[in-house]
Image (cartoon, rainbow, N blue to C red; front, side):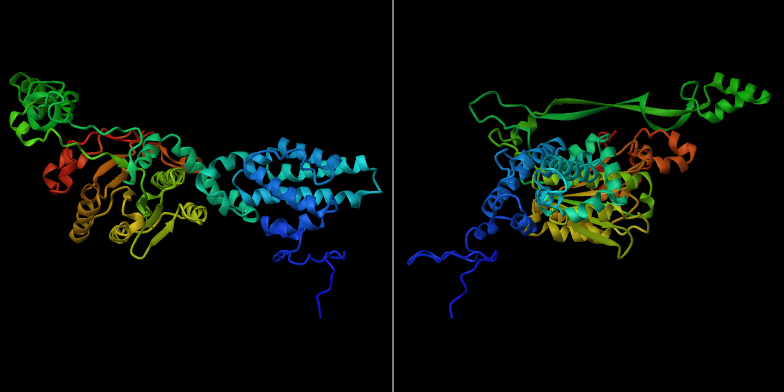
Length: 523
């Protein structure tokens, strides 16, 4: 028995001519549904405006225009120019094309809403005249989207930096943008704007392509010009000149006198003792030493250098493995900075289509590993924003997990970033594995120091340490209200290298690499 010659709307279907190609899974005009997402099928099929052919074709064109951030052409009126025209103008007035750019679920929601309001014209007539019905439909459309998009423009600026619009769901988006985690992300992004050095650091991490804006310096080939003469540093030390503190000695210098000697001036008998010591030059005073480095030509080095050897091109913009310390010592301002670094890492990764792996660590067994640049990156970021930093510090597990990751093909050109206050230590076996990855893969380990001094653990693990000097000032308003006055008024210390300055003999061979590094703090 042959199939009944009726379409789904009750009309008689035309039989295909002999020898004609089969229509496929749907007969015309329903074959055009294949070009539309399922979420708009119902509206495109049952809306009373125009014909099915018009609605199916023009729905596709509306979605394309909205996804491109443009207002659809006036000719796309679904066969209802009198009603569709005012609604189209409202779409532009409300800024919906700009919001829907690159966000398919929002573009589909705009189209579904427009088709639904066009269909309401039949419900309002003949109770209302056609002009009055169109005016009411337009007013309802405006009010519905005014409520939906209130404050959404500012949120979408940050949202597009953090998430791929193709993976956003409109039914969940409203709740996400009003959640406590999203508000934390907003504050972290605002805080990041005041720390441009951190954003710049994350832009250049990795080794996937030549560093943008950095030209390699190549040595001239033989016969093309004078051969450069290598230089060697010659250090000159001047005792007593302003510089590094080296100890305590007897002197008559008032500007270097210890506070304990100055206290004698407040005592009637001590004043006499002070005068006697000053006359004899036996006041306890700081001993200082200035170190001057002079670069001089090194003739022996010229024989070792090859004139035609060029240094490797600086590479950057590769994947990022981000290790965030979520221990209890990071609570407060350090926690806020760590979350700001996560925002910066995700922004940098999405802008250059790089990988970004988050490894958040606390005490033993407390490890959160997520792919921030993948389809679920926004959910992973909001999960991090909702975390309360607490517990101990286990650095072994996250570093070992990161090393496993960089040995994979997709992450072989990644660099490792550790954000911490440095209150940790690493066992020799893990340090040896880091050295092996440096030698075989070119791995670079960067540390973001959120504290007052470089610790032995951070100096041994990291190749470069970037200091957030004014970390105490990165408190939220509610945290600042309950903070102690001395915390709010505390001034940053003069140097992050306090360990190397006051305990130079305590440095291991690995940690001693950082002696003499310039201050690269983020202000």
